[in-house]
Image 1 (cartoon, rainbow, N blue to C red):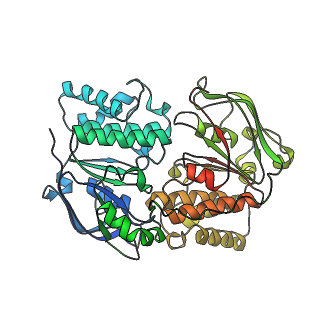
Image 2 (tube, one colour; image 1 turned 90 degrees about the horizontal axis):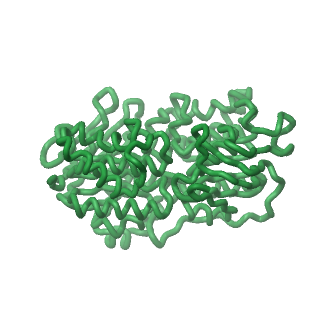
Image 3 (cartoon, rainbow, N blue to C red; image 1 turned 60 degrees about the horizontal axis):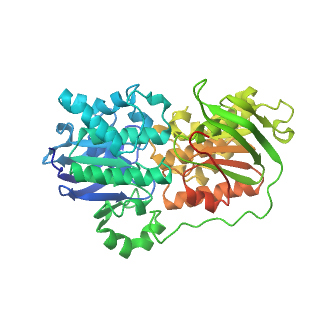
Length: 484
């Protein structure tokens, strides 16, 4: 039986090799064995970087510069192999093997767990996180939310002394959020461990944690608040909310309702079936219209085919059956079927933001990433510069213009992909989980931006589990169901 880990962070900081600014700095923190800590802070405050430091996975001097130290049970974290288990923001980056059971077993095998103990651990972990699929199910066939549960199951099976969760419920449907939180609670009852969880939406985790720690970010390095949930959120709730922290009872500002009725139809789907793998449709019988001046929200449980529908509407996946047709108002004479359009033809007609931001990055800097679309359209240099500068300012990315996109925080990556899409001013916007990883401030800004685009006549399609976003945008909802 493992025992909970003791954590000591002494004057710790980390700077990526390609960055001038420190991702996080001046952190002093002591966590006693068995404590359950909720780690908060605005987008870009360094929460994920600190979690990576606690897990001992940041790499050597060629990847960045470190100061201070992190100790687990009194020893440097790098020497404590297997004592910490980390679930990342991006579950795809933790999928290693082709089958579900093998992937969950991978960590145990690396730690040298006796073979006769591994498969009972695998079964128990899959049950604990609510991933009800066969052990031989291909990992590539899982939805984004299912992959997140898979990553958590791999950590649960390892039975570490320190469990680190980086927004583990970000891509889950509301039922899945509760299931994962309850699965973590069940794991801690069966295998006591120290817990550190990063989550923007704090209300889900308040029943489980006994301590809240807030990082200040670039303008206020280190820990700026530390105490019980009642102490931190009660006494400092308003201040934290103004800084972008999601605080219960302090909702972010939402935009006004649309001032006009939806406009003309731009896309239609009729008797549509969508698929990722040929011959295996994940949703069928879909009929919908995408209209100018309206937000269409596609919701439903994990695995229902929401992201696949988004890619099909965007002309990036061929329908399994039925059709997606662009009206003359959108196609401009190039043909009615987006799947047959060239990438250049799509640029100004349908823009897409993928669920995983890193799947879209092509350039070495944030500025260069934003220049790709306008350059492909043949815009003049002054026009490109003006467009990019405006988007950097709008998305709060100006200070990161020279940074490598892969070194950004999860929320910053998401804002960059949204900005990249907007750089070519498409008429239809398809965004998969656009509010993922955002603090309350950047969430409000993104929602306001989408509302503004709606109000000037763009058609906005959001694939989302964020029901607050659906309500704030006064979206028309299309709900998919598993097996539809």
